[in-house]
Length: 167
Image 1: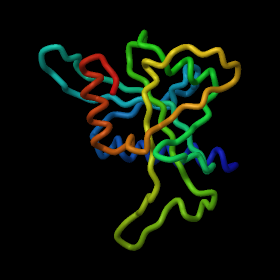
Image 2: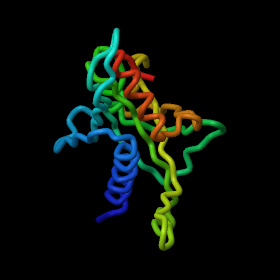
Image 3: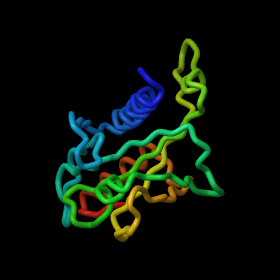
Image 4: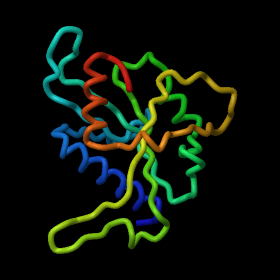
């Protein structure tokens, strides 16, 4: 497996572990034709103005490049992904999730006899309200370092989706 495939699989496992911890059901797509790598479904969320069993979708990206500039991640996103993740005319909220890992794969996981440590983080961005662009190949987007993906973040995304909105 080449390094890019390893990054993709590592991030997929990381996000799936968070979703499992949150009690979310994972859906996988065999073909990524609309910039969705994985989706998660939450059960419940009943109440006035809510939609039952909300779903959120994610485009996953993992990099070992130095992309932190100040308090944001400056991530170059292919135009295809940008256009498919933006806009408010979608049924299911979509998010970009970027994981930062060091180049040295030996440091991606640590642990001892009691714990497995995954010392890296993912960061999210909703492009729902982003405008069209005249760019031809890619768009650089800013992911705030405060937008860390956690179990609580996934709960908040599901809660927002149950009202038909994105974070």
